[in-house]
Length: 280
Length: 333
Image (cartoon, rainbow over all chains, first blue to last red; front, side, top):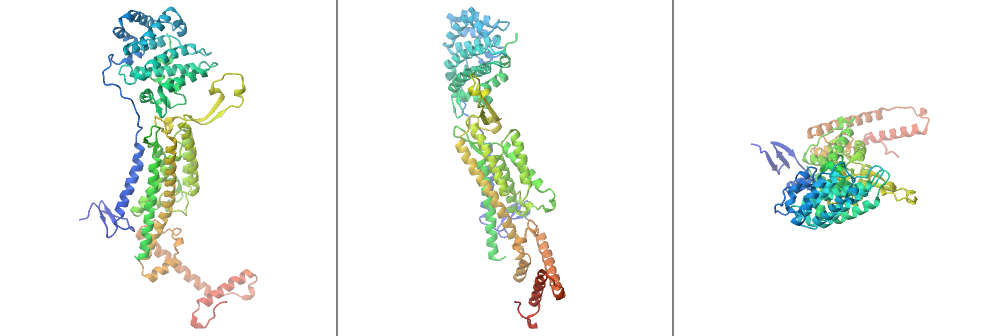
C-alpha cells in the first residue's frame, strides 16, 4: 500500500497523496531540512506583515468612577444630567453652581461667547469655573461640563469675515482646564474620557481660531495651540500618557498635517452639534 | 547518470534553493517597519496584495500571443522556484509602490507594462515571471520615491514637496503659512500604513533597503539557476543514452540552443520525444546538405565574381574532406 505522505531517499522524491513528486538532484539527507527551512522562511515573510502596532495605552484605575459615564455630561444631552453634579460640589459653592448651570442651560439665541462672558453672568461664570477647576475631581468635571454647555449655546465660531476672538477665548479657558487636570486625568476613571474630550474641543476650537474667516487667518493662534498640544500630548514617538490615551481613543488625530485639524475632524465625528455651532 | 552531471545538477538545485531563500529573506525584511517607540511591526497585507495583482497581471500579459510557450513546473524544485519568482515580484512591488492614491495606480500600471515585456531569452514561462535588469532599476527608482515620502511622513510633513512662494514673504502682510507655501502630493499616515506612534525612519529604511537588495538578488539568481536546473534535466535525459550516442546528440543539439529549441519545461516523456525529433531532423538535414554538396555542379567559366568563386572553393574543400581517405585525395590548402 502506498503512503499518503513520505520521503523516498532511493528515488529522491516526495510522496504526497499517493502521487510521487520528484525532487531530484540534491543529496536526500539535506533536502527535507532545506525544504523545511524554505517553508519556514516563506511563512515568516508572510506572517510578519500581520504584527500589529504596539500601542502604549495608559491603564485607567480599576476604581469605579464616582459618577457613572461622566463623558455623557459633555454631550449635547448632558444638560439633563447636570443636576447630578450638584451634590458633588462643595456646599459653599453649591448654590452658585445650581444658579449658574440653570443660567447656562437656559441660554437662547446663540449670544456671542465673548460678549456673554463679559456680562455679569459671564463674569460669575468665569469666577466659579476657575474655583471648581481648582477643586476636587468631581468639581473639575462640573467645571468642564459648564464649559461644554456654554460652547453648545453660544457663538464662538468665526464668521466669513473673521473674528476669532471668541474661539480664542474659549480655547484659552479649555487650555487652562487642561493645564490643571490633563496630566493627572489619564489614570483617573472620572476624568479620563472628559479630559480626552476636552483635548478634542480645545484642538477644534483653536483650529477654528486659526482658520478664522476667509479674509482673516491667524498664525499666532495655530502656533499657540500647537505648542500647548505638543506639551500636553507629545509628538509621534514621544507621546505623553495623555497623547497615547488620545491616540488610542481617536486614532485619526495624528494622521493629518496639523493635530488641530485632526482634532477638529474628531469633533465633527463625536460632537457634531458642537462642530456645527449654535443654531438656536 | 554519470557522476559529473550528478554533481552539476546538485549545485544547480542548490542555487535554486539559495535564490528562494534570498527572495523570502528579502520579503521578510520588506514586511516589517520599526515604530518610533522601538518595536518592529508589520507593514500589512494591502501592499502585498497589490504586488501580487501586479505580478499576476504582468505574468498574464507577458503570455499574450505566446500561450503555446506556456510550460508548467515539472517537479517540486521548479514549482518552488516559480513560486519564489512570483512572490519575489509581489514583495518588490509592495516595497516600491506608493501604497495609496493616484500614484499607486499609475505606478502599478507602469510596472505591469514593464513585467509584460518578457525577456524570452531569460526563461520559459513555466519557470515563473522574469525580471530584466532594467525593470529592477525601475523598481529601485520607485523604492527611492517611496522612501522619500516615508521620510517626509516620519518628519510629520504630509506632502511630497513643499514649495515656498518666492514673492509672498516680501509682501508687508502677516499671511498664514498655507498662503505662502504650496504643498504638492499630499498624503496621510493611514495611506502609508504608518504605525500610530510614528516611524523610526533609519531602522526602517535599513530593513527595506536590505530586503529589496536580497529580493532583487534572489530573483536575478533564480532566473539563472532555473535555466541551469532545466539544462541539467535535459543533460540527464541525454545521458540516459549510451555514451557514444549521447555524445552525438550533444554535438547535434548544442547546449546553447536547448532553450530556443523548446526543450525547457517539458515533461520527461515529451523531452525524450522532442530530443529524438530534433536529432532526427538535424541529422536528416545534414545528410541532405551532404548530398547536395557532393552533387553540386557548376561551370568554372560562369563564376564571375570573387564571392561566387569563394563559395565554390568552400564546396570543393568540403568534397575533398568528405571523400574517403583511401581515395587518395589531398588535404585542402
